[in-house]
Image (cartoon, rainbow, N blue to C red):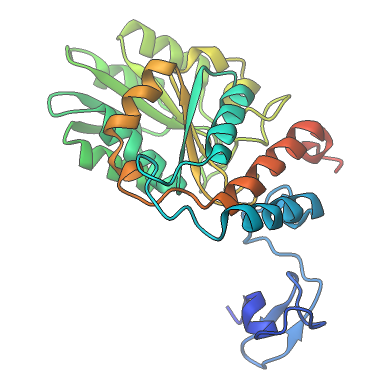
Length: 292
């Protein structure tokens, strides 16, 4: 309770060349002592990619070319060639037809669920789902229900008898418990009841699976899931979120995902760093190994 990581600005003031400018500095707020080389278990930066020189260079080059921000929403002036290129890279990496980039993972969940579902539809989510999933369900004004954590029987019971459009939302890795869903059984239930299946791989994308495509790949059901969603703030160490799937899905969401087109687009500086981080994560599978 007495430790906090100081920001670079707090440590350095305006002198960014100072010796105290370091990402591994932690302040003991009880004594004021500055400590170095402590291991940070609170960081999202799973693979350490945000500190890689290649990522920093990409960010610097993008800042020179594009400035600090997108300066517009994606449907106006905020989309650059970097955004289009990175979205294509994400789709290719995930093995999907198309992908769309959001300013945050939170806005990706809200925009996808509320953009797809309407009053009279049914959204069923695992009871341990992210707050952003819950908020997306509320904003959609669809009927919102929850099934017991990883209970295929409860999921099937709550899908039975509903004739409208149905969306089932699960996660790849549940953040509080660290467990994964029984994807094979969930896929079977969704097919029997004509429900779309969406997986939020916020804590597993770019880490799980032989090539880093998440729990869906790790369990062998990458092509059985309709909607793939995740964040860039964890494994890639940056910021933002994505949704990937069919071209029809992405084109629809471009027009109905309000959390995206009413927000300023993700900064090109961030996008450039993410694109390089994705290249590194793809080229260096050893980053995901237990021995690393």
